[in-house]
Length: 230
Image (tube, rainbow, N blue to C red; front, top):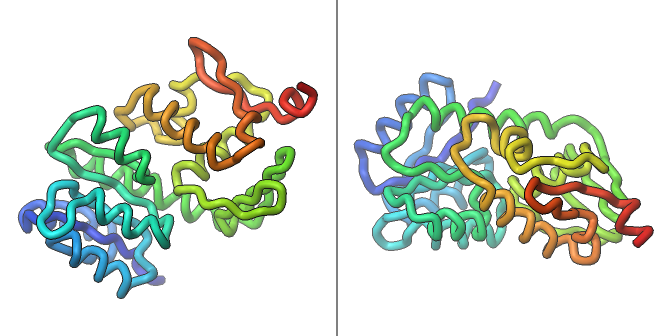
């Protein structure tokens, strides 16, 4: 069985070694890059990389720039590492398509747990299933979405969020429940994470964005019938 490739990008060799050692124990094949430019080169040379762990502050090209470059042609899951705890940085990361956000210092065990959770959901998408909700079609196996027959590009986390909404049509979902199910129980985020993703998802869904209803003071509800009968 082929090992799953993970790219670790950090300008501190000690940090790369720390993360690599914990991942190798879980039998991942770890590739490394010491700056942003090298990260893009390594990714382009290894199209089968399953996940990227990416530091923000790096020479030549920072993490934000690397994320933009990679998101131009790939939706590979990205975990962003940062020494800052600025809420604006976190929201910027999600706007750029970052899937998880971890502030330094962090527990390597927690990092590995998040890597495993993301890759588990990616592997779980191998089931051959197509979900339909109104004018939206989700191909779970291919991880693609069509709206009114036209393909749209969603980040890994946006796809997971939409999938969760579709599977829970008509159900009022609290932000906490969405965080627990889409971001996992060990995610230390807050409601702004949900709201940012919902805003982007609605925009990408166009007219079908109206399927996602806001329940003030609680969370959201995905309701096709209510929208089409409005």
